[in-house]
Length: 310
Image (tube, rainbow, N blue to C red):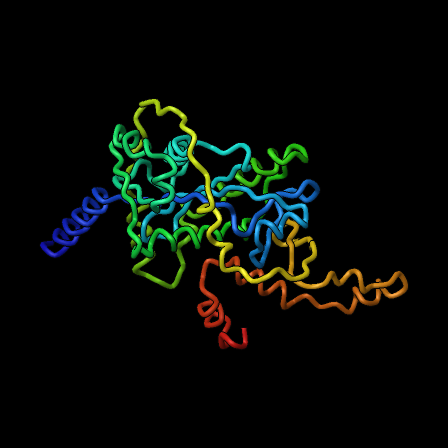
């Protein structure tokens, strides 16, 4: 009985310690793998492309906003067009009110210095609702890692909501719904079964924390200053290569892929025979593994094959 009591006491202390150190990472960036197209709506780019090169394909950038629970694969994303940027306060309050996996207000909101400088009054406004804004130093690797993971994950969001019309605004709104659905899956313990018991326990403890709803303190919408920092990811990209549009039935999105359009090599006479001989099993498997919550190594182990064979 003593041991059991000690275990419960220790679990309670650990839970209280985590409650007093809730931390979210907040980031804003032009989306690295998602663009807007007047005909295709949201287009996913498998290989990153510079914004200037994307324009040649009729693609316009969209802005990704995200919050990630520090140290956990739980995130909430939303998007906007460049012309209709959302205020940072609106994004944060919406997330803390509606994103169950974030568990409401954190104690600490960690951002990079560019985001902090884009809205100098944000720290004081957050302090009014008892959230401390901290700027990550140059050696911090956690906030950039959260942003990279958000970029990668956003590129594989499944299209489950069709836009009400073909306007750019409606396409972005539908994408936001898809992102919120992905968050609900993660918050609903969809991340369990990761073959990492310690991480699973951390996720379970986090999701058991009580919600901290934001107080009813109005925060005025303040414009933030955009700049080159939003697209730092494109600085190291190589010169662009030929690309073509291709519909992906798995994600239900149109993708812009590297290479020459294979449909241009198919004549009217041999279109059917070529299609029948085409085997896209490898491509389907690659997309499936990329969407799977487990790592490729874990998938290979479960299938009883080596990573190289997979």
